[in-house]
Length: 115
Length: 114
Image 1 (cartoon, rainbow over the protein chains, first blue to last red):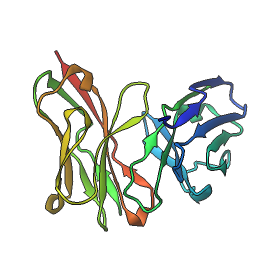
Image 2 (image 1 turned 90 degrees about the vertical axis):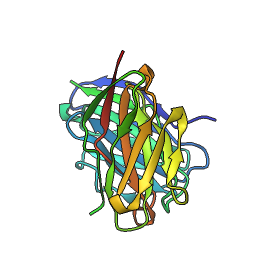
Image 3 (image 1 turned 180 degrees about the vertical axis):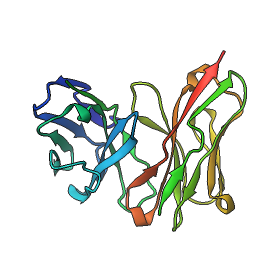
Image 4 (image 1 turned 90 degrees about the horizontal axis):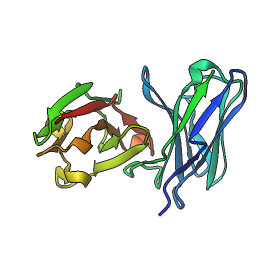
């Protein structure tokens, strides 16, 4: 079975540029999560969706960050404009229940470097 | 407030030795508990989970964990560590109040000495 697929795996860009990260969740999963991981702050939940609807975006650091889930099989996380402090590994995860109890399945992440 | 504490940031064990990684949680409802492992350059992989029933749960790669409600703990164990177990380990808690959201600990980095 295909797991969570993220693209690109690596992204290097200059500050001020727009960055778009993509995620395809596991087929049949109805919850999707975006995380950011850094050495300093560890693993942070940015936003999560249930049935394509954003449920909790309290972790989104600022207005430069936005996320969409236009359908059950695709989500994007966009940073515009990007800044060096956005450099991190961004993970997407999906699970099959909004009521808790089901594990999240993680993609391999996108390593983002903003110069 | 809901939280997960992994008291050990970094642990080093010798290959073949036993391992125990600690996890304590604070959660107001019935917790669902998870352990994940992250190898360098990879995403988090589920090792095991506890929902209810037998408090000793078996996972992949020879790991097990024991849920102790009285101690609010969910420690991960392995009787004999292999060099390939070197990685970062995350404990997480979730439940109905959180919906599908998980609260993760800060992680414990495991190094294995030959």
